[in-house]
Length: 205
Image (cartoon, rainbow, N blue to C red; front, side):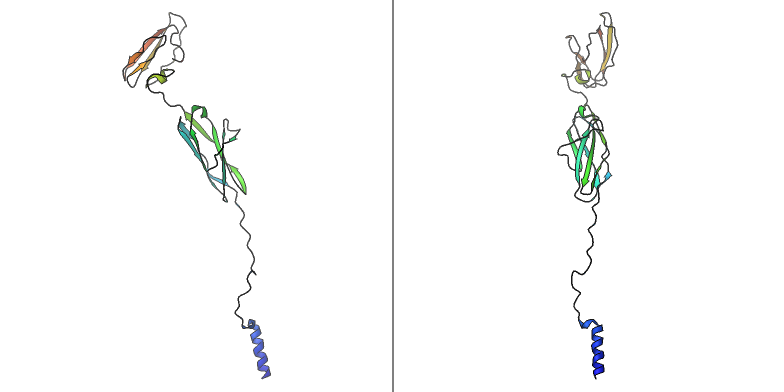
C-alpha cells in the first residue's frame, strides 16, 4: 500500500500538482516601439502659370511618421529662400498675383521628429491681363479691344518725315492720337492707317 501511495504522489507532482491556474502576468518580453520614419516627398509641387490677379496654388504630398510639419518658402532667384509667414500646410495659395511676382520660385520643407526633406522648386509665371475698355490707358493696348498692337516704326525726327501706323479694332472704339488732335472713331472689324509728321507720335501713346 505504501508503494502505491508513493507512486500516486509522484505522478501528481509530474503533472504540476493538478493546478489549472494561469502563469503569472508580466512574465512575457516587451516588444520595442517602431522607429519613426523620416518624411519623403511623394508628389512634388508643380510649376504654375496664371494671369494677374488670379491666385496660384502649390501643393505637395509627403509620407512619414505623423505629425508632419510644412513650411513653404519663396525665392526670386531659386537660390536665396525666405520662409512665407503662415504657409504651414500641405498646400499654399499665393493670393492675388501681379506681374512683379513673375518668375518667383516656391518650395516647401517637410519635417517631423525623425528628420526633414525639401521639395523641388516650382516656378510661378504671371502674365499681365489683356487691356480693354475705353480710354484711360497709356497706349494702344489700353485704349480699345484691339486685334493687335501697331508695330514700332523707325523715322527721322524731322518735320518732313512721316510715321505710318495701322490700327484695327474688334469692336467700335475711339483711338487716341497725340498733340491734342481729336479722337478718331474706328468701327469694329475695320483697319485704318494714321500718318504723323516728324516724331509727333510720342512714346507711350
